[in-house]
Image: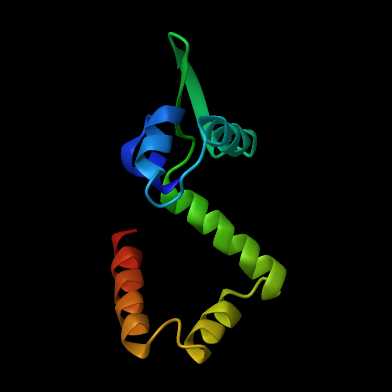
Length: 112
């Protein structure tokens, strides 16, 4: 998905070539992964000649926000506060990062 978000629209061949150094796959495997991502609603495709050209169905931030919401619901009883506290306790977020986030949230809140 990172490759599609950064470079889309792309073909399966584009993906295979771009990923061959870090994750070498046969073209059929790449096509299978792309079809599965499309079936899950992450991608859409158009047909150009004989090639399927894929693009992201949603922006990266939207997908990430939905995934985090699912994590909050499943593992934190719906409490974003519990997630953030756990991230601080396990040093995923530092106090400095929290301060920076608080400032960004305050700025956005002021824009509305």
